[in-house]
Length: 157
Image (cartoon, rainbow, N blue to C red):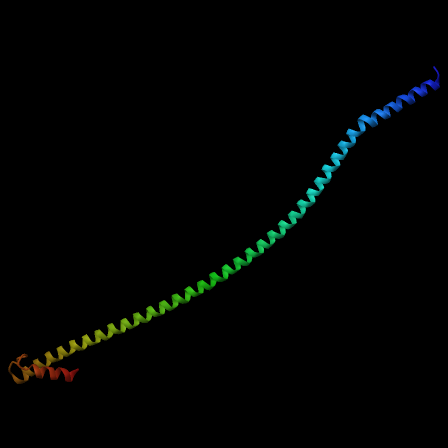
């Protein structure tokens, strides 16, 4: 065999191999590469979309956190205000109760003073009768001399 025939045979074989490869091997290979490229592009687009959504969610979370802080600040302020009101109400109630107790104590003291005066009057009257009996040397009837006893009692009081 000659080199030319071998070379021509190899060229024909190579051409058949190239044709077979282009016809049956490359299209599925290119299709699979295209599918892979599409999946990668979709994945990148989804990743970008996910990052955009994550940034949006972070902004929303910051806003929600800010609003929550403001609301908690308002709640604390209102609670402090209400606590101050309760303290003032308690002070007023205690002051009124103290005044009421003071008036009650003054009334009780006044009543005890009146009672003590009455006791003193009756003791003074009894002493006056005893002294008058001893001075006069006779017994004095309280029922008969009621008017005199009342006059003396009134003069003492």
